[in-house]
Amino acid sequence: MALTYEQSSDLMNNPAFRGRVKVACLKYATYINDEPANTPAHSTRIKWAHQTMTMPDASAAQVTPTVVMDGAVQAADISTDGDSTIDDAGLQSATENAINKML
Image (cartoon, rainbow, N blue to C red; front, top):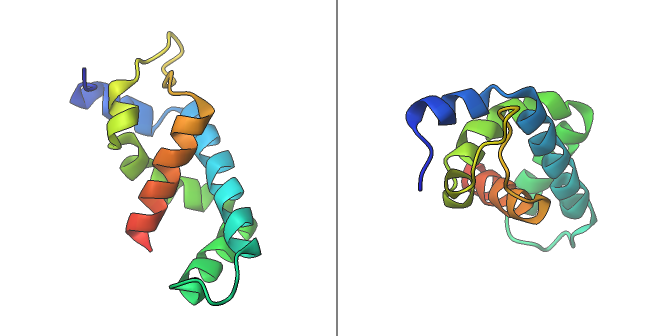
């Protein structure tokens, strides 16, 4: 069952969830930083990765709304503290999908 609009909005502003998204962004930035230079769109991706490494909170704030709208996040429950119950692997995938849409 998908989250309600109110739940989605609350999740976008939940500090614990945004912190988890920040970690997922940093993991993906590290991955991009280590990828070969001939990877498609590498210059755009590496620029995003470097910006994320220096300003992870800004990257998390930018990508969190798109992550929240991901099908896997929408299908997960909300915990009593307002965080998503999606596991770390699922959140990593949702975050990478959101970033790839932006790039």
